[in-house]
Image 1 (spheres, each protein chain N blue to C red):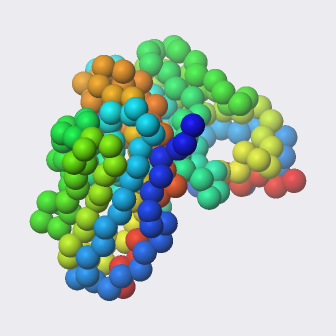
Image 2: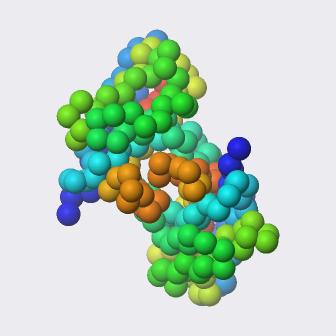
Length: 116
Length: 113
């Protein structure tokens, strides 16, 4: 079974530039999560999708971050414009979905962003 | 709000030593508790979980018991191996959650041969 795929693995940009990360969850997983992991901290939820609808985006800095999951499968997270404090690893995870939430999330390897 | 506190690392042990990584939580109601592990170069993966008080989660020789009276979920292993070197994250999912996890900061474990 293929795992959660993310790209790119690494990205270096200047502040005020834009960047986009892509995620393809495990086939059949209805719920998709984007987490931000700053160095030395645990992952923090940015946004959660159930199919193509947003379940929770309360911690997403909406002035600069956006995310979509148009067809309920893969997802894109965008940052525009980037700030220095956005340097982090962006983790995508998926799970089976609502009503079956066991807390078992399947994570991708992450996309490491460095903002200079 | 809900939160998880775990012991600071890094932790360095010799092979076959006993491991304890402390984790305490703050939550309303009855959360489910988890340990996730991140091996070098890999994504986070579930190690074990417990969904109610006094439950013991176990996997790969690791164990953790859900202690409601002390709001703790300490991770233990009787004899660590070099291959256990990784970052360990304690996490909770509250009863009303849509499946979102709240993570601790992680504890890096290095096991020396």
